[in-house]
Length: 184
Image (cartoon, rainbow, N blue to C red; front, side, top):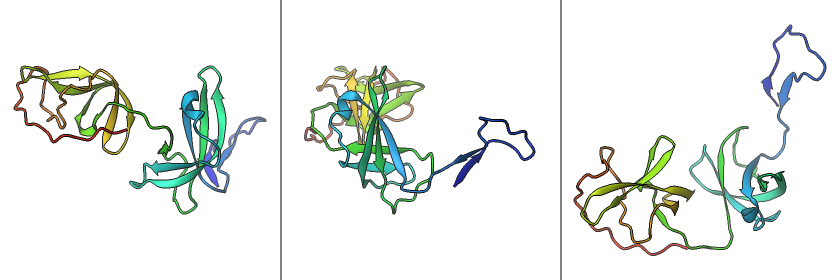
């Protein structure tokens, strides 16, 4: 399938100048770049959960190849073969989850994360009941939770759905949320 024409009709074609971009027919794949630590836990034939931007549902797929992407960064490209019944176009963005060793991590509801330009923040409640904007380093994100790698302590009280007008130092009316079970 021709996906892109790189020259116009009547243009001079010279040797080594690409004319077209052709997409190979066959199973569609999703390529995911992983660091070497995570790539070591993945193997060809392993199942992965994938979700494309065009779909809200997660589907099961199979890892078909693992290749080193760059020695300078110790990264690997994991190729996942998509199910044949999954409609996909070239260039579609997707997500992949792999089963592996569980770990304890600090997470917050995704609704509590505030983006301001390139920076990520979470509002915490200070001892005197004020909203304090705290910069955080975000890790993995799933449907409802966001991992926080740095910037929060486990005992910090987080504003779960900050209103758009909330500002640093604003007095809050604190309502206790129900206790949550820790997630692995």
